[in-house]
Length: 593
Ligand code: ADP
Image (cartoon, rainbow, N blue to C red; front, side, top):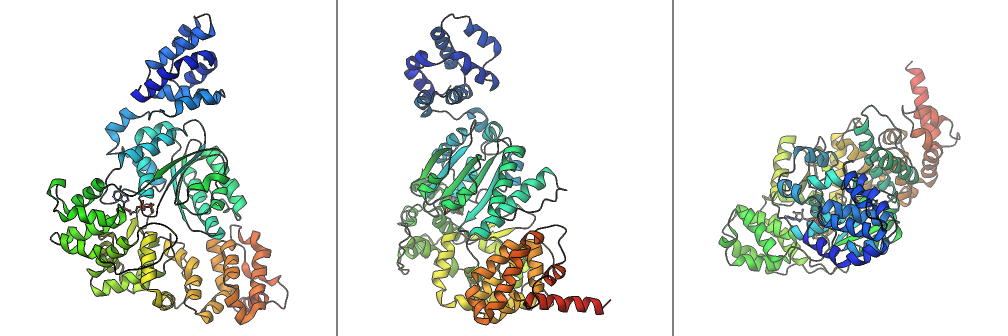
């Protein structure tokens, strides 16, 4: 038993002896396997309840951390909340022994569990924030016996996601608390249709790993998605952990209020106020402390801590503890190890003066570091990097989208992306079959700010490149690349002010049909709502005819095998544009036999 827990137990021993009913508690402890039936019997030989209680505590003091936790949980279950809360503060982490031997090299098994669940790997250069990681793990152990919420909150870029991923990289923890697995879901700033798509994909992932043959219809509303997820988490994946990364809105959490075990990261502390269940929180107060930041620089430049030049400390101070900024500078120094002074001066320049009310976070350092990193890229690559400006936040894209966007061979794209990744300008998620690339939110803020005047033309470039590449019709596969286009093409058109393009796409039964097949109708309906003002300038009747068609047939369009859209459309009123296009197609079919 670790020292803190032991002291705590000795301290409150008297109170416990007075109140507890050992026989009930021992039942729980036996079923947790922390005491044996023999031990129980020996305790029962004492005649009074109080003596039995004393003997149980005596036994507990000789046991390990697991027993202490089991005892704690038993108190909670037997509604001795007050007593339990006395013990809570020193609740130990159980897996000290397994952790020491495995924390650095997770065993294959845990790695598989995490990778199947989509938990991101460590960044290339990584320093461990032991104290914080342990705080998160301690809280995760509290979910051993009952569901609940753990919130990691802190500023943007303070390392919350990396911390969440690191906390579950622990053999003992997974084995003890989450044998059902760990499932990662990046959320970000989403609206309802996007959230639905995210939960759909999570359900799909969970169902696939149970039975790759299963062909469930995707849930088509948030309520249905919530029920599906509830069923999966409670029945099929009991004792598993769901990690929700970067939540902005408490409305999002409602969809996950299903009595399961959740770890979430957010910038907003009060998010879980509106959901039910046990709640715990860990604050990532500031960024890295100076020594950790120095460690990152040392790792990047392959030097010993003591061997760092004197500028290192000043650089770290300018980075204000932001692991993101330190990583950008570290990556620069790796390539130009004699530029410590130079980058220090760059960081100290205050060329970006932006007013951002949203947070007290110091963005200057990030802006300077981003500018410095971009500066060392060849000019053509600087131009290419600019294209990320118009990718929506929290969206991860496959290299193939960039290959279309840049009109380059996949191999060339790969090389360029590797360069960006090495400079910490870009991050890669390589869980699925295809690598997916993304920027940190703050990096996107920087790009948007910097390219403010070019946004429209950058969006237009995306549309043009798509049109060029898919001259003969939209993609027909269901890979990540096609998904991107189906999801975001209309968004780019709208942002590029390409209204004409937007009408011809969205007023076309072909597009509607293929998008509904690939993404489901919810997303499409949302497009008509979101772009209503633009579409209505062309023809508000046609816009509502398409929207009506989708709302009326939403249920059918969810079915698999996918229904014949022309047939469905033929039952629209004859005055509808949807009907007109369907009729044309039906006649075309008839004449071609
Ligand atoms: P947040 O989720 O708080 O916005 P992230 O966890 O995404 O922040 O971290 C931002 C970046 O900072 C990461 O992409 C990584 O480059 C760097 N970083 C964060 N934590 C660490 C760490 N422990 N060691 C090294 N780099 C880190």
